[in-house]
Length: 112
Image (cartoon, rainbow, N blue to C red; front, top):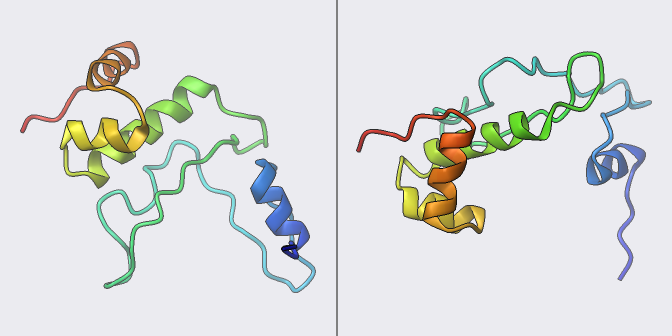
């Protein structure tokens, strides 16, 4: 079964920065220092959080892996309401590995 991808779809699939589309629609470049999109909930009622994590800086360079990993862990903690066992399960790592990563990345675990 073949899937038809537009040029924009392909770039997203391989991790390239989005390009302007010919139909006039373009994807906004996010501020890498901004909080994760929808971390505290969806902007529209009834809409699920997207959890956008930016992998490029504003000048289209890749962000360091540790920064991206930290953003993903922070999002997972918020998304799973601080339930660390569930966070670890969803990230595919053990709880002890999650706590080690929190320590290495200087992220405070939630006070539950």
